[in-house]
Image (cartoon, rainbow, N blue to C red; front, side, top):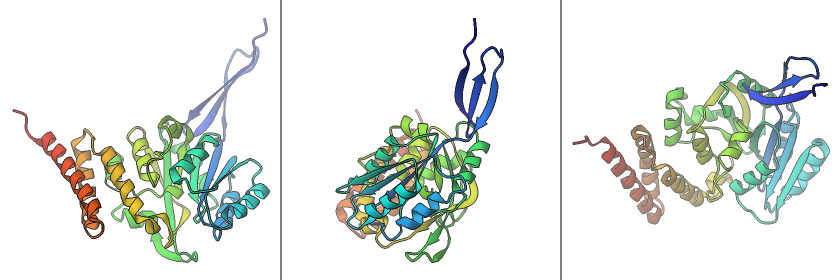
Length: 322
């Protein structure tokens, strides 16, 4: 009886390993296949920058297999500009346009639902990628431990007109250097220092944790925490993106909602059982409380309540038994 040929695919060290069992061969043959990636571009009133961003995605030395472009209710020509470029340059794509803004987290979840392949990387349409980003980060996954779910590099800081501001994202947010692996999660719990535009993520991990939390105004800190508490991240030295600092960016134009999301995320992670992790969160809340006192007293009271709650939990865990 003739034995049917079979093929099995697994992920190993960032590459798809395809195991073929040819008919009547009696043995298996492994071959490495380049993983498939989806690039996600999110726009909100970024018409002036979309073309530069999409050009940087198109011009990757290893182009994405699929592109998802989401315009979240822009009042300018963002959707039209993006649609024309995507339809002309990306054979495999998905276009999503919201009549009204629905928020970044919901937009990302829609993009995730339409994504394909093994890895996903996202970028706001006012930023851009260096030409080798995809190739460098697939290589970083290939060198990383099998359980790694995120690789990240660095991003240049640029002004509204594209002029360099000097330095990089990581130099600004972790001036003392990156934490060692055994302190990565605790440091991330204290502050979000990862440049989202310079990351690549295993798509199956995003699906497993349930995507982004749509109750939050901004997306990345909570997602990094949910991934990092279960799987390792890997860093590489390359600068693979440019982060544009705009007066109208989310963190500047909608500071109140950013603060509220930070409060929600902090409350979500305040129940950690590890004493050192609770201490890291406690340290992160102190400057937040000081900043809140200079603004809305209602926020200050909420931050103060959370600070007291976390401090009390930590005190109970450090108190000797008996």
